[in-house]
Image 1 (cartoon, rainbow, N blue to C red):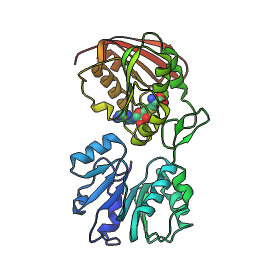
Image 2: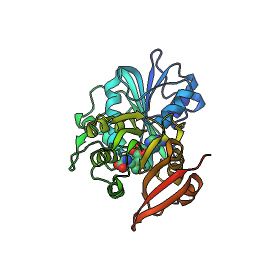
Image 3: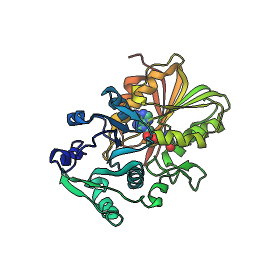
Image 4: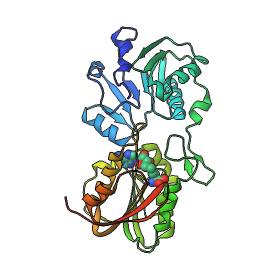
Length: 334
Ligand SMILES: C[S@@+](CC[C@H](N)C(=O)[O-])C[C@H]1O[C@@H](n2cnc3c(N)ncnc32)[C@H](O)[C@@H]1O
């Protein structure tokens, strides 16, 4: 588990000092900032994951999905994607002012050691602090980072013709479970449709192509970068794109006829069925009583009791060793 306070340790030990003026930029901060961040007079958080962004906003912190401009200090927290981490580091070096410092914190399991090794080949490091199965290192970049570090995160067309980028769900190949779900995109799909957790838009593009009775399709996705790239994959006047935490969605004024979903099943490294269960509850909240919910899930994930709790009727339409396709109807009022 990442230690959100680790990045502050070099400040506590006076190995690092805050800039006298200007905003400190924090790229990919945790959802909740440790109390000591209150000492930072101004902090701008770049957080593209909506649930975290919403939590930070409640703490009265300035949050943007993508930061621009120049900052006297830039903090970077690692994610699970090495390509994203190298790109964020390169952007930090580009956005920090002359003589400003870049501070990076990450767990061993997120690759902080190998990242530090790579960075050391290009830059002199000002300091390193090891704590809680991870490290913080900091430096004063005097030259731009190698261009390929940032370029690796630029969206590219994959072998199947879709625009994707590293760190997104299944960027190189179409997910087998998602592909299996598209077999159920038939005449029963009509009217207003919602794709919850739409990623880079695979399901959305396919359902629009197959189902001409759809009048509108709302794509709901928490990762800002994935939502942005889905605009290039889903080119259809019926599509609308929303940066949203699906688990926090309220009942809409116009509920949906069909809700489709391949739910996320982890937020850290471990599989967490709780997220998928929240997606099932959200689907039941946002659909019409006469509508349908079509979902694909990893076969071993225990979603059956959530289906029972939220829908009057549900059935497994198909399953194999890896996946199951579930259709649910008649959402229960809760
Ligand atoms: C398993 S992927 C499916 C993506 C796409 N529908 C497909 O089939 O290729 C689940 C998606 O849900 C998104 N996600 C995770 N938590 C979310 C949340 N709280 N609200 C909205 N989307 C979320 C992830 O970023 C990811 O793109």
